[in-house]
Image (cartoon, rainbow, N blue to C red; front, side):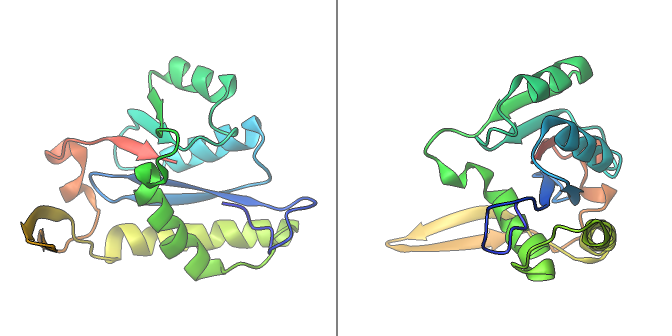
Length: 178
């Protein structure tokens, strides 16, 4: 997600959001721009913050993801790499929701382009990671029932994304979506 402040010309920072869909574990990392070295560094830093190994990356169709650099990165680390289906904007719904909840609501739409702002973003993401992953309870939809035109969702018990919900203790998904 770009922090251009409404003016996409010039240099500005980006935020990479990685979310484990099964656990709800979410990590943000700042990037100087969308170039491969910054993306790889952000993925490496974010990966160390997950309580389990990253086995797969499901990205959107942006050029920062769909390239040989990330493909090679995943191949070397034995990480499955897939992308969203073209024309299906909801494929990255977990990350898109996180971009709103964990990026825009925290730092808004202002431009971020100085070194001090970059460091501030990283501090914000560190604190938000603690809050989101250890303190903020989440619920998952476990069933949907349709009654005519009305759909009723049934949720599991609210819990934090801490390791009790992680793949190492029984959940099936271990794919982070950047």
